[in-house]
Every structure is written in structure tokens, then in C-alpha cells.
Image (cartoon, rainbow, N blue to C red; front, side, top):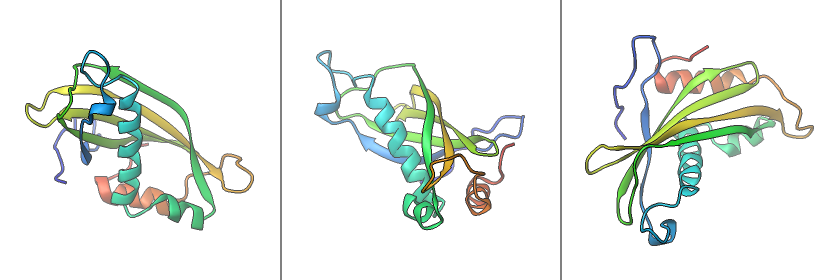
Length: 153
């Protein structure tokens, strides 16, 4: 997908449109709109696709002896999506700590570019066997930096 120029003057990376989906009937509620909990699934799918886009998949993490655990996820609902809407899910790494990675997420309706939801998800790197926090590996940091043109502090 193409890069969307949405960086600000503070030097943040652009949001990357990394996952697109069409709202399925099963994802809607009795009111005919996307059930709010589904947005967390969309957010998770977007993070997973981001890992594939930077060529550092969950399988690569496992090979390298680490994994990530979600420690916080937040969403703000801005507008409703309905059955059949095509959604463009965007992501950027907004913050990297020693052991943590915080992603900023947003989703827009393709037909009118309306912002539907935005939020964050923070993951902590942990050793695959001990599940104790570890430093985010340099190879992962480098992959993120190469993909989004730099790495936030």
C-alpha cells in the first residue's frame, strides 16, 4: 500500500496504510454498524500485517528467541462503519522504549476517508522461554526504522 503523508512537525513517522478489510455482516451489531470490539481485532490484524511489511514476522521473532505481549490497548471511536464498507487500517511506531513498542493506529473508511477510530497498542518484548522482559532486538528496531524512515525515541 502507498504511504500516507501524515507526519507532523515534531518529526513523527507517517502513518502507513498496511491492512485493508471489508466489513463483514458478522462484524456488525443489531444496529447495523461495526460492533465496537471488532476494532480491536482490526487493530491486531494491522499490527500483524505491519510485522510482515517490515519483513519481521512472528515466526522471525520466535526464531530469534523472543515474542511480544500486549500490555495496553486503547481505541477512540469517531464514526461508525457499516456492513460492506472498505476500511483502510493505518499504523506507525510512535514510541520505542528499552523493552516496549507503542503503535499508533487509525482506521478510515475508503470511500470518504472518514476517520472511524484511532488509538494505541503497546507491546513488551519478552524472552520466548522465560517470558521475562528483554530489550527490543536491534534487528527489529532497524526493520522498523527502514520501513518508516526513522525510529522514535
